[in-house]
Image (cartoon, rainbow, N blue to C red; front, top):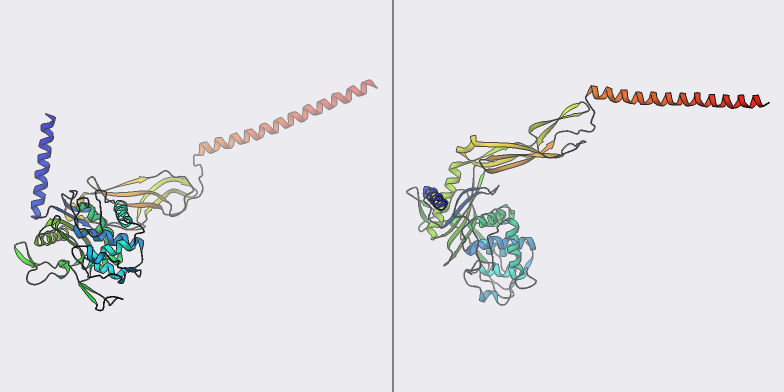
Amino acid sequence: MKKCLLFIILFITIISNKNIYADLSLSCSSDILIDAESGRVLYGYQENKKIYPASLTKLLTALTALDLGDLDDILIVDEKTPYEVDGSHIALEPKEELSLYDLLHGLLIASGNDAADVIAKNYSSYEGEFLELMNEKARELGALNSNFVNPHGLHDDNHYTTAYDLSIIAKEAYDKEIIKEIIGKNKYTIDITNIKKEARHLISTNKLLVGTGYGNQIIINNAWVNMKYEGATGMKTGYTPKAGSCLIGSAERDGISLITVVIKGSTTEVYTDTHKLLNYGFDNFEKINLVYANEFIKNLDISSGDSKYLSLITSEDLYTVINKDKLNEIDSSISIKDYNLPVKKGDVLGKIKYSLGDEIIGEVPLKAAFKVDLVIIEDTNLTLFALKTIISFILAIIFLIIVLRIVNKYRLYKIRKQKKNRR
């Protein structure tokens, strides 16, 4: 009976997921849409499924390189890379010297596998070190279902990730000013180097930025549109025969920044899915302010000096992207941590959380609005009792001193009288 019940629940879940998937009529095997600012998942389909990332790997390569070097670092092309790395190239030559800044453009705009290899080799003191650091970076970000064995994404059965993990990596890349700048460019020129006698002119592989005209059209809502997307800010393309076409896209409109990851489709399908996900995000979600910085939230009852309470205010603004149909379903809860007086102005004493069902959509620390120094006992009866006790104690001591003095005087009187009688 239990097995039958579990089967029914699983069947309903699968059917439910398929219906959600069908609502957008998506084609790729894994898809995810997130808010680029918070990283919240706004839509997902099989986002935790194991997939091969192809050149989407290069966003993590760029992040790892930026942790290790500076943009003006000069990197030297080794003897082997120009000849041993397959796939897309930017025609690097042995002993050529380029800045990390130039190579990042070759990596992210033209998707050069040779650029990825040169970066990895220049920032490794031993074979495999850069890859270890890539995996360490992924785990640090929370991409826990991934394993990377090369810096470019050429197929290897042990080189895998998920759409969700890629969305985490993409968000981190989007937060890096220099990466966001590079991925948003349509083209870039690498000037003449010590070896190359002509400048290299790189054109973006991302048709969200450049996809117009014949051959760059897709059908959205029964109409032909360009692959180029209004408000697109870039990100990364990828392809291998095993991975299929893959695309991480990003766009901004009306103060909302969105990131999409679509995995394993045809070239047309990845752009169609990306357009549909971005349209879904911009059409159905809006950015709202949940609370402003220094906004009053709660009074804590205390007794200190002239104050009978301590006001708590928010430490910062909090914005979130939320489905327009869910605006009235947001709940908040306040938690206060243990504290002792005195309290300084600005001390964090708790936090306020905002939730939508079981999902926490944001939280803000709560701080003291003003300083509180001393505690005064306010209970009059207790104060009078303490005062009477102190007075009684003082009177008892005075009485004891008087008695002792009388006893001492009597003792001296007796001694003098005895001496007189002897005479």
